[in-house]
Image (cartoon, rainbow, N blue to C red; front, side, top):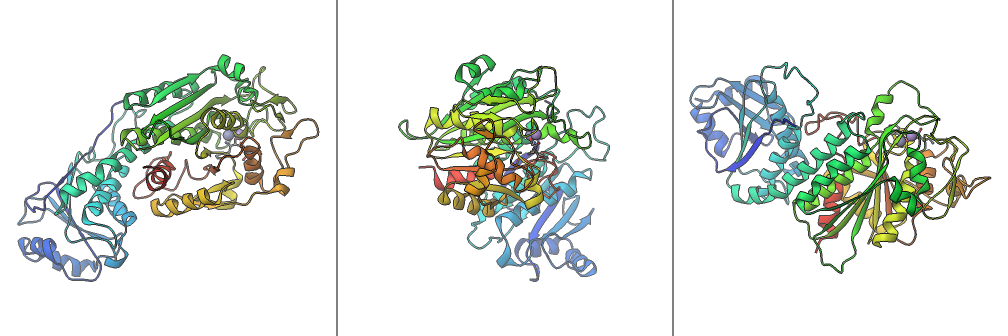
Length: 501
Ligand code: BES
Ligand code: MN
Ligand code: ZN
């Protein structure tokens, strides 16, 4: 795949830079340090422009001088960070993303960003610099492989970004794992953005196999193997498809051999037509992203392996295509899951839970994990409940739930815990089988979670309903992509903060 790569470097502070030169400033104070020195070289043009444009350094504001005299730079920018006490990692990422995005629309190909004496509370200068780079990197993502007419705008995008800081060496060290978080997120974004005629179950599995380069052990199970294992629930979903269903197992062993792994399980419905319970036409194209959970698990495994995380982790993804066809399963059909429990398929569009039922059962029995977290674009109802700002969190374990909520706040990938309980569980009892796959409109995301829980034994488990966050998310300074890459940061941080030795 031909991809525009932005090269990122860290260096000591210098004003002798070509291309665009940006200086980050906090709100209110007069120009100090390097900013003051720069203003001197520019004959006071910065101060005059600040006054004329009423630029005070508020967060999100940028002042731009084009073609200045006195420095080699073709353009000088001041970017506001807001009050110095409020500067955060997230704020710095945002500024990095905003500056990169702004220059993409120009003919500039190089950008230098100066951080002089900017350190957020509890954020060392090295990490602050790394976060700016991380934000710009996330912004630089593009998915334009199917555009044969390249670039209608003026520039070709930024080719190089240099972060100038007195803590350049520390920044370089901090940035190394972050660049692998970005790489994992980009893999997730790519997979979600790909159309379903290209990314069907086998092709998805093929792409995951590439993780073996990083030391991830990848196994792919086809339909015959899954049939032997008794995965009638997962297999029923793929019955109407021309594409063979796949179960992919990824293993990263960065911890002690004896240590139990942490496990991540993803819904990978490469396209969800609804099956015989066919979806309406409007917006159905979005269902190419119904493998967002699986894509997140693949991206996360990339990140963990590439940064050599000191943890044992497994990723299991169920890859299917949900199609209507003469062979497709029907409403009223009863399937037998690997657990032995029978399921009456009332609605073939409630297919994600059928896939996860067998994937969860397989994962807990084979790997006996420390915990199991599944991710799924499971219900439209979660968007009715939480919008696109929060993913739904369902869990049988308060500690794991709290850890997820906390890292979500830190990483800006927020989760909101939803209730569960016997009253909801009763709603999926079936007249003919052990359970049915829908519980009615009321509490639709919760009954879906209750269904999943029937396939979880005594293991700490969390389910993240990412229907609102994995795709079609609002565009931000650090994400312009349809597939957001949501979840990689969250789970990487969960592992880093709580499960690495
Ligand atoms: N993949 C959908 C959920 C979805 C909807 C994800 C919109 C992203 C955007 C899921 O398979 C589905 O169809 N769920 C049904 C469940 C219903 C039949 C009980 C839904 O949410 O309507
Ligand atoms: Mn569906
Ligand atoms: Zn679906």
